[in-house]
Length: 274
Length: 271
Image (cartoon, rainbow over all chains, first blue to last red; front, side, top):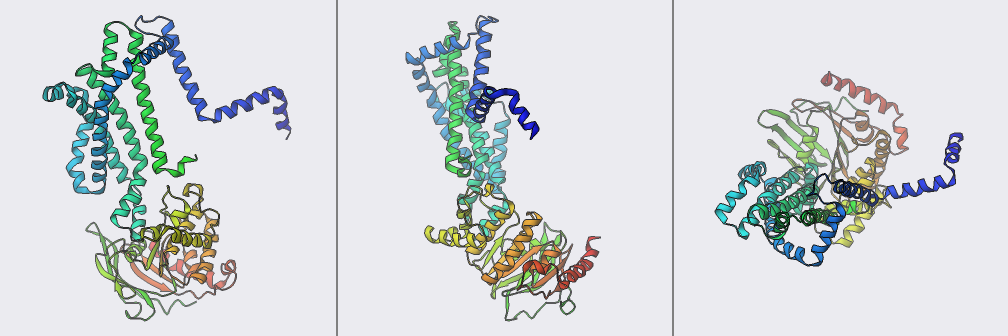
């Protein structure tokens, strides 16, 4: 009791109020996210201002360039081009990756047949194979789609496979013991139980897909956002180049967070309130 | 207490196979894992209708394996299990299983978990929720219907597992160490509740346990299994009056003496 009143007096009422206000703020995750971003952007702006490299624009300069590219429509035009191989590639990776992964998780024969392929794909440095892809498929859309697929497919497939394998056997036994059909076991138990790990793989895969799309545009032919990066670099408009890079990073982050939201609403009702 | 009369050894059938009150008959069950590990050897047992039978033994005696074979979740290498005279080919509606690790769906509410057995059978939503609610109430979880498993304690989770098994209205409840993942205080309360529940539900229970106290406290018959390979070592029939105060049972001399006797018998397998 005595020690409690002492701490109360030490700060005085004003101090108590600010700490309460601060602790309420620090309980909200958004607060910490904003602080983290503010530190990062502050450091960026600081680094830009000390002029350690003439080709390094500060945060504010980059944002101004970003705003300019957003308003004059050049960025929208670029993304329209970039999204084409990215969207097609991701749709292929998600469909093939999830079905192959679930198939491998459920059946040993499918696992023996296809797991080595995905492991090889995941281990191989895909950027080194892109010239080969260009050699076979040319410099068109097909090569870029393939670049996205090559980067995103293995991680989606392997994570889906592991997710299905890690479903607690007792849950499946439980469904069997109440005479759940194989279909009910898969749709009602295995897939929802596997979904957290599966979605972790999908998030990684989508992020990989973004790098695949940009890599293709940098290595194959400069189009879309890759063109914005290379063109602005060649004419020494570094703020614009950084703005283009910043935009693709931001988009990838937003896409991955949206996926997380989707997972929560679709499969994890118990986590929604938390 | 009646210990000597029922003492038998592996190989000899416990009761005539066509005993009228046997709901489950286990005949000549062998289970061999991965070619050379013998988990069960020549198990012959009858489980009588309306009784609670415990399968008791040290770890590695195959008691869970035997329960899963009775449930139809595992196939025996040799031998046959019959439920109401019909051979077991897989899980059936007359048997319901209670899992050691509860096996609740973390993404589903208590209500949905308790109604899962009815859900897979295609019972309409309104009816299955009504029945699930009834059994949630019966196991003492009223008011928790909309909670998720992670919001419950271990004991409460197992109550959901029990409600789920009761809701399908099976004749036999197969319980695989249902209280082993629950703390001691909760376990005692749960055991007392189970005695009360038995009087209402009039079902046949088969309980796998490694706790001598639990087996003696709850069962009409205790099947002692010896380890590696699992064989029926002895069958004990505790004669304990469970009609009065459930807490008083733990102080009766029958209860305490029988625990000592069983421990004396099991001791050799552990040393």
